[in-house]
Image 1 (cartoon, rainbow, N blue to C red):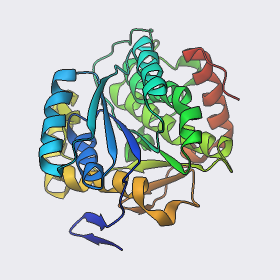
Image 2 (image 1 turned 90 degrees about the vertical axis):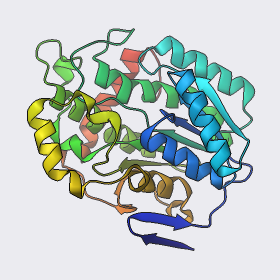
Image 3 (image 1 turned 90 degrees about the horizontal axis):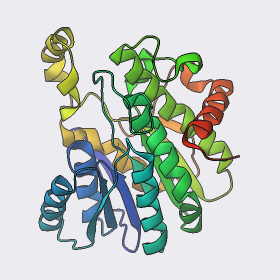
Image 4 (image 1 turned 30 degrees about the vertical axis):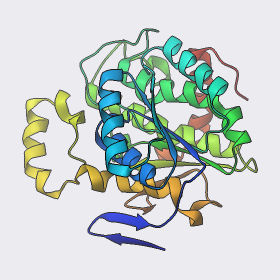
Length: 295
C-alpha cells in the first residue's frame, strides 16, 4: 500500500533484516531519509564526516524511531583515503548492504580542492560516491536484491561535463561546477545500470526538489534574493526526502533501473543527461582519477 499525501509518500514496506548506508545522514534530507528507513526496521549506517553531528543524529533517530540498530561511521568524501578506510570497515564488519544512498553533497562553494586535488564539488558529489560504490559493489551484489541511489538535482541542467577541464582549473563558476557534478550523478547511474544488468542490483538517480536545507549557505546575493522569492514554493526537508525513500523501498521499482526520478515518479532529464557516449567517457575518466579499474 502506498499513497502520496501533502507531498509526503507513505508505504507500509518494511526493511527488517536489511542494511542501509546513507552518506551525509547527520542533517537535512539524509537524516530525514534515515529516520524514515529506521522506522521500517532497517539497520541504518550513518556515513558522515563529522562524527559529533552524526552521533547527535543517531540519538535523535533512535529516540524517534524506537530502532536501536543505528550506527555511525566516519567518512570524508573529500578524501579517498577516508573513503577506502570506511569501505574496508564495512566490507569487514557487515554481512550485507541492501541499500546504498549516495546522499551527501555540497553546493556552489568557493573554489577549493579535495585532499586528492579534485575540484571540491566534482570530487565530493561525484568522484567520492563513485569510488565508494565501486568499493562496496561486490558486497552489494551478494546482498541482492539491492539498490543504489544517487541524489542528483534539476541543477544538472546548469552544467556540462568538461572533459578538457574537469577540475575547473582554467575557469571556475560555482553554479556550473555544481551542475557538472549533478549531471555526473545521473550519467554514472546510466552506466551503472548497464553494468549491473541481471545482477539483482538496481540503480536510480533522484531530484529531491528545491528543498530548504543548509546547502544554500554558499549562494551569492543574487541567488539568495531569488531564493527568497521562490521559498514559498520550495519543499520541506520531509517532503524533499520522499523520492529517496520511494526509490529505496517501492517494490514496483524492482524491474526498473537507470532512471531519473522526482516527486516519487519517473521524470525527464536533459539530453546531456541521456548521452551514453559521454557517460562512457566520464566513467573512464572517473576510474582514472580515483585509480581503479572497473569494466
